[in-house]
Each structure stands twice: as structure tokens, then as C-alpha cells.
Length: 358
Image (cartoon, rainbow, N blue to C red; front, side, top):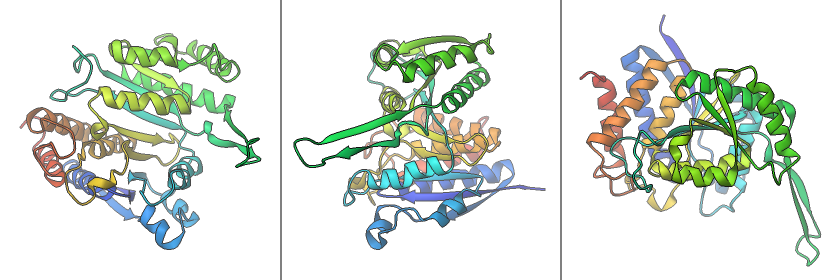
């Protein structure tokens, strides 16, 4: 009996629908080649929907997507909507409602892609960041007092629970073992200043590390991580960190791997439904021009397939992307690829269809 998966699709804003179209194209090609079926259900939420209706993310959509096997997201962000409304009302709301407590970000430099780091190549830039995705400063705890006056007070609290920290760290150790490369897990924190939160993180990290004697466990401050990601990215295999630091260092990771156009990520609930997306923004100035790079969205479909168990199909998409980046596209920047957005999707699809041996 042919396996069938239900995929909830949220094309989003700006160029989101354009890159999602290419991701769906590649997914359908992979499904056809590897013998499984995909059923797509599309939900057109985002800036345009909010401006027309005043509605951000209805509870019934959360209920619907929670029943899917995975969620594929384009991008959220609209120039006519105040920053924070859509991000908190859609992205964070979905992450929290679906308990997607891991943000997974591979940082890999592929052959044929330029990095701003001098004398570094694909063998030097190949690590993964495991970011806690449901607590920390993003939990929304805090408030304002006397807003708009000279005596205004603003408090934003970082929430770190033993449960949340430990499950993130355990996921990172298991992922590092499964990845089976350098088998080194680095905790990124700030124990010398954020002494309460990162005391919890560090104690938990080394307690859990005792159960993984095959994994080298070490620690570095976040500022040192940022320096070494630029100077010695080859030092890293898997990094685990909290929500805010993870948000920052993964953008740095995207730049050293060649740019946002090839940076994919997943919001993971290992026991539930996960959501996959390119980590770049909606790039509204490029909307409709068919010049945006869809590779990040396509790579996120590889992560999606791996998460739902279609490992061979997932690998075929990443391999096809590698071949496109090496053989066809010479610049991953928008408008400089030498191909339209749709043509890049066609290239990847054709390589998936042909297989790695052809």
C-alpha cells in the first residue's frame, strides 16, 4: 500500500508563495520517484489576509495543521503591517501551540557557493545549530509600566525550565550521535553574566552528557562562538543553545554558508507535527519578479521528508541542490542566479528525477 502524507502549506507573504511553489514542485517529483503520495492543504494566512480581515491565525487553522504530517511555510512579513504582529501572531503562536521546541538549523557550505570567510571551504563549514524554540526571552513574559512617559519601565523575562532545557539538550545529544561526524556537542551560553539561566543550562548539559560517553561535550560563551564561527568554523559539529542566542548565531551561520537564499530550517516537535521553512524573510521588493532564490525553501523540503521518515527522498533533494549549486547557479543572490525562480526549481526537480547516478 502506498504511503500518503498530509502536508499543510502556508505560503505566507511577499516572495513566500513563489519559493513555496518550487518546494512543492520538488516534493512532488521526489514523491513520484520514491513511491509515496502527498496531499497538500493550503492556508493563505499572512499580511494580506490580516489587512483584509483583521484576522491573524484562527484557532481552526491551528487545529487543522496540528493533524498534518508536516507543515511547509514560505515567509511571514508584510511592509504594511507593524513588525511583531505577524511574527508573534503566526510564527511564535504556531511554535508554542504545536510545542515545536526544537529549531534545527544546518549550516553547510556547498561546493560552488562563495563564503565571505577567507580560505574556508565546504570541508570547514558543516555544522548544525540546535536552538531551544519555546522558552527563553521569546516566551513573552514581562510587561511595561508608565508607557510613553519619562518613567517608563520595560521588562522582558527569559523563562528557562528544567524540562524545556533538558529535552532540548537531550535532542541535541541524540542528533549529534545520529549525525555521526565529529561527535562533538558544544553548549553556547553566557555563564559569566546570565548566571541563573545558564547555570541551569550548564548543569543540565553536563549531567545529560554523562549518558553519552561517545560524544565530546564542551562549552563556549556566545561571544566566543560568534568569533570562532568566523575564524574557525571547522571547530563545530553540533551547537546547542537557548532561543535568543540561537536566533542570532543562526543568522551568522547563514551568512558564512553563502546567504539567506540557501539557509533552511525546521521547527521540530519530535512527538508531533513539525514545520519547515527558509529562514530568510519575505523580501517584498522582489515579489512577482521571479528572481528570488528558492534553494532555501527546497532544502527545507528535504528536512521535511527526513522528519517524516522518507530519508532516501530527502537525501535525493539535497544531492540535487548540491548539483545545481555546483553545475548551474554561479551566484546565489536574487537576480544574479542566471535563472528565474521557477527555472531553479525545474533544475532541482530534473536532478531528483534523474537520480544521483545519472
